[in-house]
Image 1: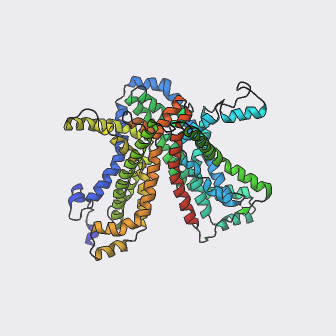
Image 2: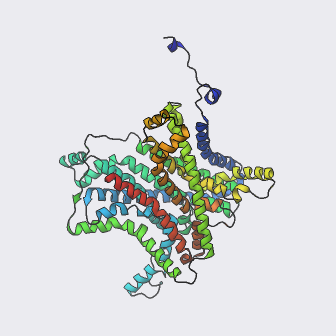
Image 3: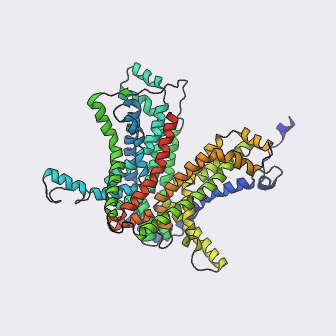
Length: 562
């Protein structure tokens, strides 16, 4: 009773860090520093934006931002509709119907994830060029001789960007909604049919509403990738906010104005994350029935037609661009020197960047995940685990352009301090590529944090307790118990980060050292010059790296289904 009447006592900061039962251990402090580090570029970005001359802002509002804002809003809206239609439609088709090629398409529909958006734009711009192979073939069939007699609409347009980005990003929606459709109990759909609902009515009234949380997550991921895109939008002539940030900094050397535009992009990110939160809010279902939906067999020409229609996103978003890249690469291999020294140098730089990023991400993510596990095990600071995990994973939601612009100001300050301390010239962090690795690691560490946290969650605490009882210390327990069990999660997350770092374009464009070319920046330069055939081999290398995450996803799906 006396304890009830005592006033509440909250731990002080000193008590948290150095009390008899310290809550903030060095492990927790390290994880907290990682989480707060993600906020550093955002805070620096906002501060940099306040330093801009107001006359620059007036110029931006008059001549630059209206068009960029309009294009960004229309692009996001168009991509949301397209990925929603393609992703949900294909996911429902391979779940509810049995048709020729269904089993192959169930995993092949994930293949466009291997294609960076800028490579798809790169390939289709050449394929649909007025004197390119497709238009030349169509004119031959129709009996025309000149592009003046017949010409398809120009792909360099807002509608072209919406179509190409939708063909690449729909797998986010397909992956999330298919998982939800598979897990839906069959008796709910059967009850709707018994009550008189048609097949279409059952889908719109029962299946789709239950899949709304998955749909919200998939569309949000696709929109965040759209906002991060810079290569495809610029190739296709669409001046988005992301492209405007890049041109304002690179072409006009106006960091403060670029920071102001990037702050507007932060508002879009907040809006997307809010939509995703409200899309998932108060949505859930449970059932004692484990019986899944049994696909209905579609016979005859209707089944073949359905298979052809469902395969179109795979053909247009993956197969056609890859075949084009293989064809162009084969032509280059026939030359005397198909692989130039610049390509070899770009490949070496790409591998070193990806390896460095992966090493940093794995170490940092293990620190965060291990800290979260011990917070949960010790029942210390219930909100610490959730807060640190969310902050540390925030980088994936922030476009690389924003992270790069935000890091420039604090990085240059640290570089000047290091230059004075070490008595050297130049900017050590930026010239050595350290800042680029840090920024890429911060952007992709959410992938590894999620995988390692999930892996640690599957290890029962009793194994750790048994190891301690047998005399092992913390390091020995980790080496003998945790590491072997975490090896699959470590390998898969490392492969995912390695592949994403190889494909990263916006961050690399802004933060790369002088004369430092990666495969992505080399391809960007070739596309800017219009020499598409010169960048085909680099693009094919990036696509091969991008297939690693898709292979892991397909393997994971087959394991779960098996």
